[in-house]
Length: 115
Image (cartoon, rainbow, N blue to C red; front, side):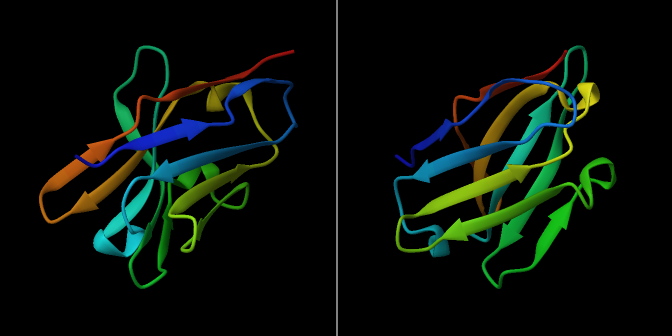
């Protein structure tokens, strides 16, 4: 069973930064893509950022220019660097790994942006 464990969430002031980490129990190159979804209060879970096996990245329009996604192949880890955070970035962030039609999920980590 694939396991994903997130860390790095917390409370941050507007304009601040956070770095989320996701440890994957398998070689991340086994997956078509890995990345992060966010579920804001009262909303559906939405893709925030992803990186595929070829290194191509995708971002939600709302985070372009502020968030970056990276991976450490040796550590089987995926990271989300979140800069210039806004209150509307407040959400539970879930790490995922995808292969074909299967998605594996972490337990989620809360990010709260508030003064």
